[in-house]
Amino acid sequence: MFRNCLRRITLGLAILILAAPLGGLLYQNLCLIHERKANPMPGRLVDVGGYRMHINCSGLGNPPVLLDSGLGDSYIEWQTVQPQIAKFVQVCSYDRAGMGYRQASPRPRTARVFAEELHNLLHAAGLQPPYILVAHSMAGFTIRLYAARYRSDVAGIVLVDSSHPDQFKRLPPDPPGTDAKWIREAEFVELTAPIGIPRLLGYCGDSAALRAAECTFDSARENAIERRTFRESAAQARRAGDLGDLPLLVLSHRLNHHDPDIPADLEADTNRAFEEMQQELTQLSTRGRRIIADNSGHYIQRDRPDLVINAVHEVVAELR
Image 1 (tube, rainbow, N blue to C red):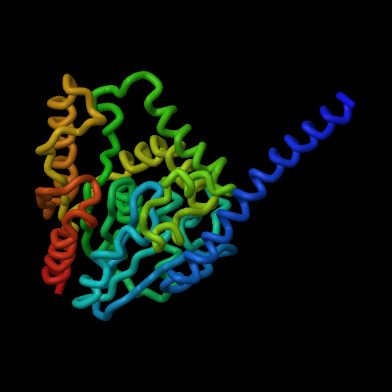
Image 2 (image 1 turned 180 degrees about the horizontal axis):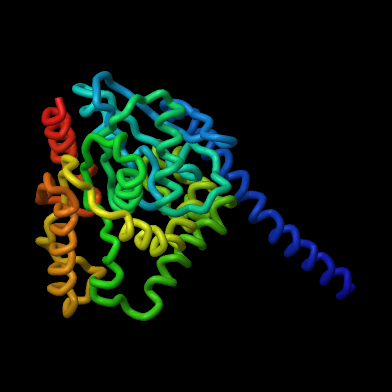
């Protein structure tokens, strides 16, 4: 009788162990189907040589503007500014292969490859150069490599709180293991995304449109890979050289509040290094200029969309 009872308990535990991930898998996929039905993919998928990338264009007029998102982000980060820019020029946002509404790429996930894939996408989509390239955060590396390799395709650049290739060397050192922890966090999301754990824990955000675009295993995997290759992308951007006399606007958020992630004794040095590096980005071009974004964090396109819109308008007007 004891053995029969033990067998029933063991069987029950086995069923629970199997049912939990299966239930999570069902939860994740049903939610994603519902969200994507309510928020269908805008734009189109374009073949770039064996795999397709997502691009979403609106508006009319030259030169076309391309919006490039930062590490782990999809096209949707530009949803506030794109409709306003579309009122005076053609503007496109897109997803790097592996993010949002896109197929994964078989190629290495570094800034040099991102630049090549972007070039292939723009030409396959039929957009005629030269372009104004707008880059947030890590995408600043991609755009610098793009301009170095395809200079005749670039009319102007707007950097939005762009990463600096030397930031790991020049910002005060993080506590030991911080870099590895940053990567492990993304790998946890990647591992648990298929069974809906990130969604359940609220990691996917409050917006159904954002979850439809980014709360997927593919996006989680791409995010983790981009974190692992971030230093390599920085090194590639460092070797890219300057931007000559291209029109260049550098938008930077103002460090006028305490960041809880920065120890108090390192805050002054961190802010000083950030200011120096952002100013150096303007020196990439003889026509570089910096704009400070008050009342904004790192995502200036969310917090101060007016500044991004005005910066693009200024470059368009100058070129016209």
